[in-house]
Figure 1 (tube, helix red, strand yellow):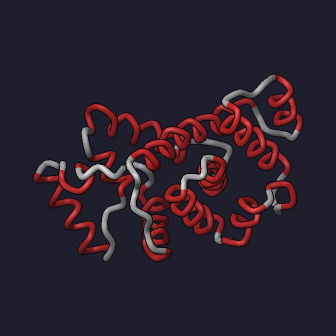
Figure 2: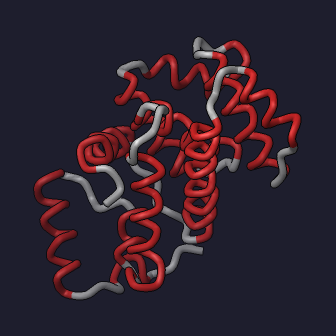
Figure 3: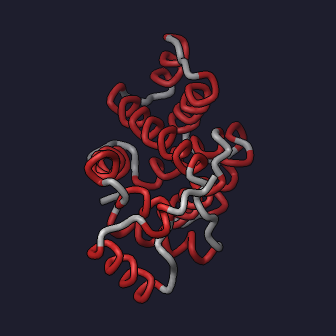
Length: 193
């Protein structure tokens, strides 16, 4: 059920910001941004900090890899908004839409490195089953992924398991392909701040 509060529940300064974004980008502010600005003291500020660190903080995973993880977790969760947003962002980051679509279509045959494939497999299991075991971790580590990379991938997974559920709970409005592409440019330029 879409809450009307996402359309009107903001302070005057935030409303001005949204108007400026719409004027300069030619697109409405996505609901993901609206949610972060609504009650920033309760959810928004913490969510932005955590997600920005997971997606843009120092990591051996590239920005493109982490955006692909976000798209993959969102696909497992069947979150249409986040699939669109992060598929577009990963495609732009890799400069290879076909690679991203291949992963989301069939992980096992996609043209990616084995460490990333093993990591996505583990994130998919964690998202579907809410558990992974020592054998799952051994498989990821044996594919050449470091413990720190596992931690970073788990942070991406946590951020998007939360975001996907909020997107579905608040019935985020679907953007046009051009809207998702514009949002991707913004995310690649500014991150999640």
